[in-house]
Image (cartoon, rainbow, N blue to C red):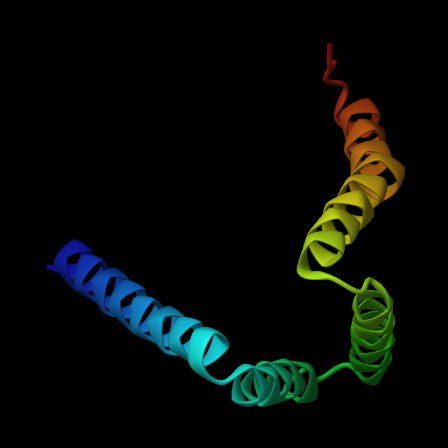
Length: 111
């Protein structure tokens, strides 16, 4: 019975997410300004719900930095390339070293 409720809740969350995505997509295509306002509202809502003041401040700084970089990119293609570059830079300079450090702590090996 518990598993059935979990599956039902998972399906409900998925359906809600798909509806939200469709709504955002429609706004993106039909009214870019409304899309940007909704995107900003969603991000602000998320950040405002962070309880730890330091973490909230850091998230706000990261989001402001991201927005500033994306504004300077110019075209849609440049924004896409910039986002990829920022992602891979963060991956290789932050995530990968942290994962390797955890592997050393846990005594596992990576190839």
